[in-house]
Amino acid sequence: MVSLLRRSRRVLVLGGARSGKSSYAERLVARERDVDYVACGAPPEDDVEWADRIALHRARRPASWRTLETIDLPAVLGSRGAPVLVDCLTTWLARTMDDCGTWTEETGADERLAAAVDGVVDAWTRSRRRVVGVSNEVGSGIVPATPSGRRFRDELGVLNARIAAASDRVWLVTAGIPQRLR
Image (tube, rainbow, N blue to C red; front, side, top):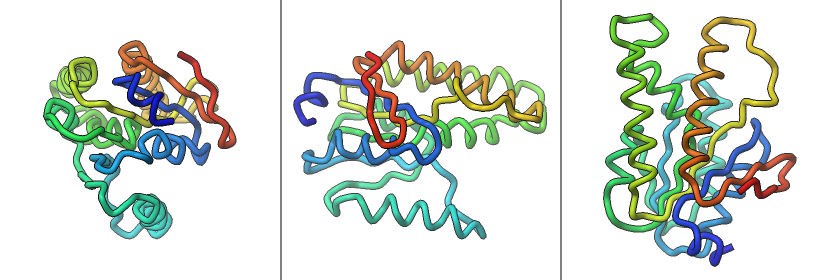
């Protein structure tokens, strides 16, 4: 696994919910002493299940890994340092769409979202750090019943495609089994 990460500067790991994608991404950097683990999910408020998932992820990480709870991916990817594991682009997009006012249809929301996505794709492409990103694959799921769900699915599909195009390696994890796509 280490040789794969060392040969590849940018790796994207896709998969469905509970597919094992995060565990696989963590294995890609497991032998690295120092890793910047970027947690993009919102901190749990009263969601016990979400808090349990975060606790599970934290428990798997070595003590030497630094956890960064942020959605400022351009700043992290633009800095120098240890390999970066971004978990995950799906939660980054959800939080960014909130921040941009996408759900409340604020004036300029679409432009702010487009600029944020462009900024992340640019930072991913230009990063001098080795980076592994995790995201949910949306191409084989059900069609969401709501306009907001379809909007999110569409935006995530575009983000995944752009990040995949800028990656050296792309993996799809299904039932805990990684399949190399690129």
